[in-house]
Length: 256
Ligand code: SF4
Image (cartoon, rainbow, N blue to C red; front, side, top):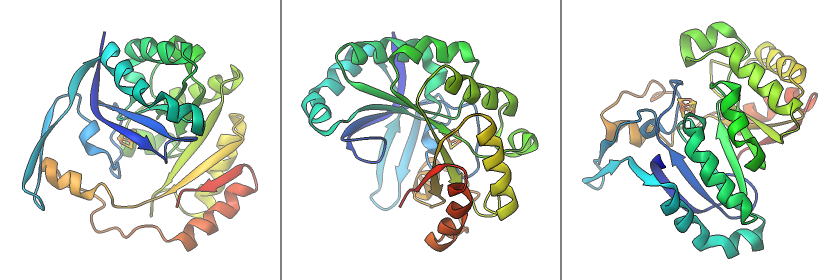
């Protein structure tokens, strides 16, 4: 069994507890216009050409589960010492649930923690394939509005909401992650609606991820237009203001 991989980052510190290896899976079924990993959207291999260095790089390759296991267990001692593990991100990792199941089971059997970062737009049966081997889901939540999903993000809002509720009901550990996108989901009333909606699903903790433009160079390297090129990063002052709303409902952090 092979997985479609865009990148593997060793010694990641921002993708969960401790020192982790983050595997970025290629292919996504949503199309958030602010996405900072545009190289993961298409399942096809893509050339990226970076103007600043004049380097070209082919992004995307099929890697066997055995090769991935061999790669990530090189850092096993670091995971154990730091309370870390492996994070599967993307793109949408859950589009490759069959391969992930094999990988996550092998790591779980060795006592290595596995986190999946997902936007949740797959049938719940895909989650059931991997649930026994996953320590925590990082569940990206972008909107509380069916029309936003239909018109801006793509995907099926009801499916995403029901999957979130079901994961919590099934006793899985879930951290909801909300990207704070200027002009989209950062107003006071919108934030209140987001909180109400997440509370109804049984959510207890939320990480707020203020918008930044760190992915801009990758759009250029792929020859794509970045819709948020002119949008300034969200100030920490505004993020703090929004977090006051979320703190009324949840254990809330802001990614710095
Ligand atoms: S779900 Fe994530 S990877 Fe997919 S388009 Fe949105 S931000 Fe990008």
